Structures are given as C-alpha cells and as structure tokens.
Length: 376
Image (tube, rainbow, N blue to C red; front, side, top):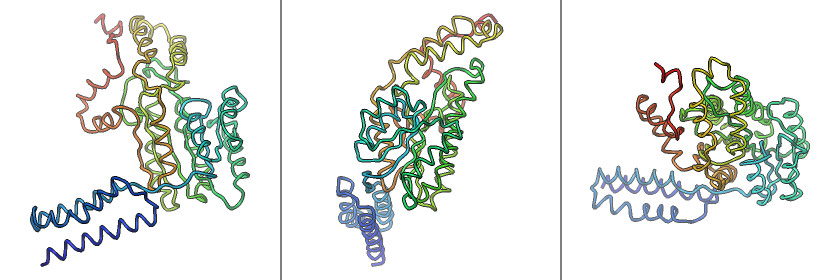
C-alpha cells in the first residue's frame, strides 16, 4: 500500500511539473512530449508490477526526472526583437544577420569596416530594418558609440534582447613561431573585445532580460597544436561565459557558448592562411629559422592551406545561435561540428600522456621533425 502511494506521489509531481512547463513555456506537442505521457501513464504500472516495488519506484522516479529534463523548451518569437551581432563582415556573423533579419528581427550588424564592400553587400541582401554599425570591438570609443546608437533606437523603456559576441580571428602557429603581436591581437579581439562588449551592453540586456551568446572554438576546451593564441583567448571566453551565466541569472539574462569546429570561414580560407604563414615567416629570426628548418615550415604551410576537412555549410552554427536566442530554456553549451562533443569529452577524460599522442594527429597531415632535433 505504501508503495502504491509513493508511485502516485511521483506521478502527480511529474504530471503537474509537465503541465506547468507547458503553460509557462508554451511548449509544442511533439515526440518527446508524447513519450513523457507514455512514461506518466504506462511507466507506473510497468515499474510497479514488472520491475518490483522498491526497484521499480527508483526506476520510475529516474525516468520521470530524465523525461522532464529532455522535454522541448518553448520558443519566443523573434519578430521586432532587437539584437546586436559583432563581426558581421563575413562568416557566421554575416550569415546570422541575414537569417535573423529574415525572421523579423531588428539587427544591429557590427562590422569592422562599416562602409566597406561587405557591409554594403549585407545591407543590400537584408531588409531596411538591418542597421550597420562601424564596430571594432578593440576600440572603446566605437563600442560606446554602438551602445549609444542601440540605446537611442530602443528608447527609455525597451531593452536589448540579444548580444552575439561573434567577432573573432584565428592565427595558426606554434607560440615559438608566432610574432607576439599576433598573440596580443588574438587576445584583444577574441577575449577582451567580448568582455568589453558584454560589460558595455549589460544595462540594456538587464532591462530586456535578454541573451548573451559568446562564440568560442574547439581550441577553448581542447589543447590543439598550432592554436595556442586562439586557445588562450577562447579558454578565457568560456571561463568568463560560465561565470557570467551565474552572475546574470538573477536578472533573467541567459548566457550561452557556441563552440564550432572545422567550419570554413574567411579566417580558414587559403588566402587568409597564406597571409598568416607569410607574416610568421617574415618575422622569424635566423636562429629560430635554422632550428626548425625549411622542411618543417613547408609542412606547416601545407597544413595551413589544407581545406579538405572544413565544412562550408554554416547552417548548424546558425541554428545553434538561433536556438540560444529563441529557446525559453537555452543551453549553456552548443557544440557544433562533427566530433566536437566527443573531442571535448575525451580531452577531459583521457590521461594527459595519451591525449598528447592523439591530438597532434588531428592537426598534422605531415609529420616533420624540426631540423635541429633531427640532427641530434
């Protein structure tokens, strides 16, 4: 009798929780919703009579908790909501601006070259609602001017719905080879720029109970060769995002990380990679050049220019950023790209000695030993 009562309590709690979720979040009925009903009405008799009283009760309770966690979250309409996206000259930022504009959003598109050809092209491909901002996230004056422009549009009563910190850059190369100006620039744009933008727009985000979406990269979680500069910056982005998520929860502001891997954007193009390589080569001193040797540098160049493994379809990343903007319960982490989730998990689980043997294979198509090590 006591077990029957406990089963009823669990079923009642689960049913009420799902009902409240539907009412508050406006959830749509789908496969997971139907599955939750099966668990509610068929799970109890199955667990009680087939599994057993105590074990069945534990299984039924666990099933209810799992089903509640995987229920689809409701969505909010994007029409007329105001969002600001940085780094809209190309890549993810440009594609997201076009997509959100098509959904009826008022998009403030921050471009490094506000009067450039790409900004003009973006304007011509979108509605009159899209507004181009001259925005270099490393320039405090331009960031403040962007805030003034957005605040003027919103007026005294409205808040900002979304800040997408997408502006970023990639410099590939070992720290020993990279000129420090590249390292500094990577940190300034990828990390300091994100912090500056978030800090500046927080008053508007608090008022709008909006969302902050920070673009990271696989290098922020997985120690990949040639990505020391980006990895240092993006690891900072992820740490700051996790902290901000806790700090801003009391204001109703959600913070999400989007973590893409192996997508082809302007920074991964052959032209950009060749420019990256030439900058490195021109700044190498004679001792470093002699230590690594031309064979090593040629192999490094070959790896930079290899685009075969890159995904040109940006749809998965755009979908993740859109979900973070529209979901009533956005996720904290959106891994994008084949193998991203597995790589992050493996880097956390595998012993360091094994990880250090596996990860270089992902970045090196040609194994070349620097000249000075080969001569020993």
